Length: 375
Image 1 (cartoon, helix red, strand yellow):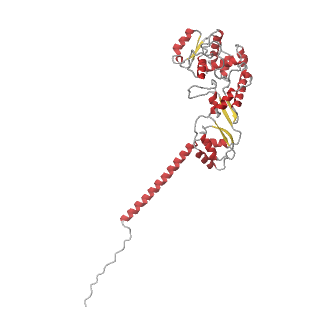
Image 2 (cartoon, helix red, strand yellow; image 1 turned 180 degrees about the vertical axis):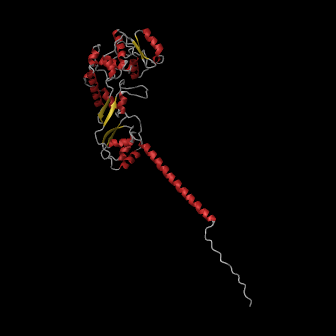
Image 3 (cartoon, helix red, strand yellow; image 1 turned 90 degrees about the vertical axis):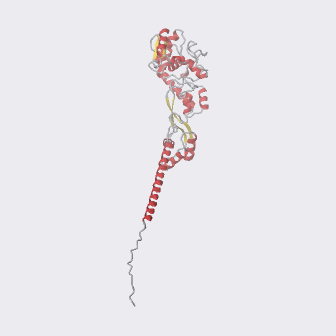
């Protein structure tokens, strides 16, 4: 039998490596996963950053006026959440949640104390929390201003009257009105008619009080301070040397204060008024009729029929038209020498004095085109 043809087939190595297509798919999937993770991490970082910005905004002050205070009473065993809700309801903080979170993050390092506080919306939450954890008698400051009236009935957006200052300190309209109507006993009120109010007597200065002080308590301290100023500067004798009692001296000083806040000009302004009084002229002060017009809510009119209108009626008005400052009081007690009968505040805010009507009219033409045309 012939030999069989035997064909030998050499074995081929097995290639168990993945094909190029499979390698590409896995690589693409890995890149997608990495991209997704990167996006996720970026989002997390963005959210955290946004949350931190939001949190810091919530911790920031609600307002900017540091003189504005609001009364808050924290009851014993109040939670931080309850305190935060009360602060938010009074617009002292932006958000109760942020306040509560801040307190929680502090842990037991600070404990909020029960009590009565006057807090400012111009404080940050950390400052307010620090305020509430002092555990000491809380005090606050209140500032009255020279030239201020008891009430400002004008449409001015920036008011410095006594009532507004009290309201910013957290007192209610009812409390303020009641205290301003009360009768007070002090040497300061010598010569003041019983029918006259407290206009001109709330002396301009910054005072510190315990948080529980009432409007009446504050006014009594203010009157005591004003009386000390009167005694320390020998004002009664100074006024008397010019024929005025204390009440009249304060009245004239209030006019000087409203006519000129420049202490360098005030003694000469006082001299003008004394010269006009001595000669039987009217004081001719615009600020007096402006005061009574604003107080009674009528238009400012130089011909206004009121004893406060010193353009029409000779002598002093019935009472002060504002609170005089120390320099105005001193100017009335010790006026400058001279024989000026007129003065005006020019458009350049310089005070121009004149001895005659002709000189005064020339000053109006040359220096007071704007101011002197406004009632």
